[in-house]
Image (cartoon, rainbow, N blue to C red; front, side, top):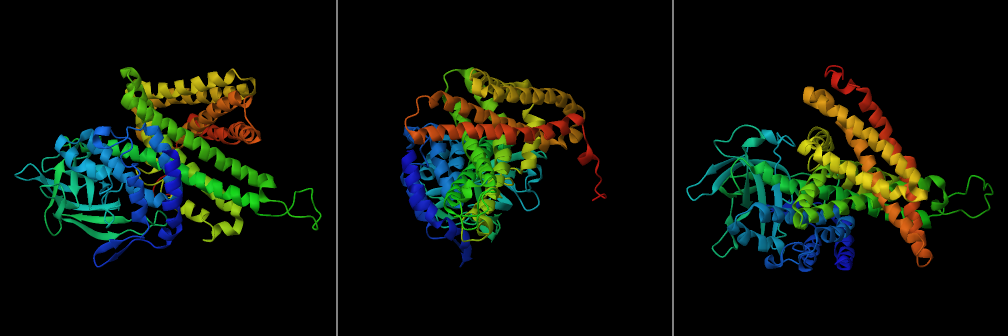
Length: 560
């Protein structure tokens, strides 16, 4: 499966990555036109079974573990983040329907979503309400046949309109007439672009009208839309689950999407790293500080210490981030399939704690890694002659969508820290303690183990201090949530790298050949870089939180 994914990504996704960035989606005769190579790439993806890979055999799937599907998906994300967004959203929509839809809804919509005939989207935001879902105004009025007529305008809808599929299934948050205010009044509806006939095939228009396209600095191959519902004719949708529980159901898709955002950001960091590594190895530039003879040959960029620093930063983010995303996928597998109910519950709680870190911290650090890739290319990196500038632009969206990173920080500190009476946080600490114990048994890693243990103990003490403060004055405490996220992120990344170093140390004595030995030593040295350069970044964040500084909270609006 991994080799198939790598081949299709290289042959079908990567070749049009630049072209679809330059040739943005456009509207012609009322229809959205996208780059012509996007459709065949997604068709190859679906034909190989990736859209349905993790589903049961009875649904046409291959029952692959989620960790395998996510490892395969990373190839597509690295090759073309914009094109893979279409199946990414479709898979997430299918997972939500599989978890919360009726048997009739599953029978009519899952097969075409899984074989690539239908695509899926999520419709949350509105022009006046981006991430503030409590302010959603779209309405859904009951019809005589049990369905609902929807009206409203949705904004920032990726994949909202195109001709790539026979139909588009929109999952829409809206309010019924008797809905209470706020997020507790939201219900979730399945709204196809075209209504289905008796045979389940697309038929008449369903009142889902394109109002315009949004033009972005990156992700430009993914059409992004403004959609009007019920503007010219009735827009008919089906309720998913119960009324007023829509946000609970939508979080099934949103949390999956947030982990996917982290994975996509890491994939862009990884491909940027590989491109800049190749450039650094092949580009002659200057001489060593002690090599002053201008007649001597130039040395490759990679010989310069500061270039190696930037390569190490990228390697640390890319390979450490990938490890974290695959660990999250393993937690999804345990949550779904582990025979022990307690293990299933704990896997879900730990995944809940890690999700905002994967989305927020990794997308920020991946952007920093892409910045380093541009810097290694020098002036060439700032041109369109090399792809690293596009990787940065594509990645710049990831700290924003699926809940901006500031919201993720508030979620981590304000909700996940105390979730399940602190069980989620305890599981997070236990995972670190396990890795520290493994590393302490290896002399060469004992120093790293001690450093991580000390930083984690400090973080735990801070959390114990923060919890009562959150109950007393949440607004003041959460003003510094981004610092809490930063500390949590660097500790999490350091644990991932220490775990890799433990494995590398155990394998090193049995390494077969110079290439494998270099690979394992590279892991060990990168772990050292993380502990020397990156984990210490948690200290000022912890210091700020420990000091109780409230500058951000006190700053008046007029003071700006």
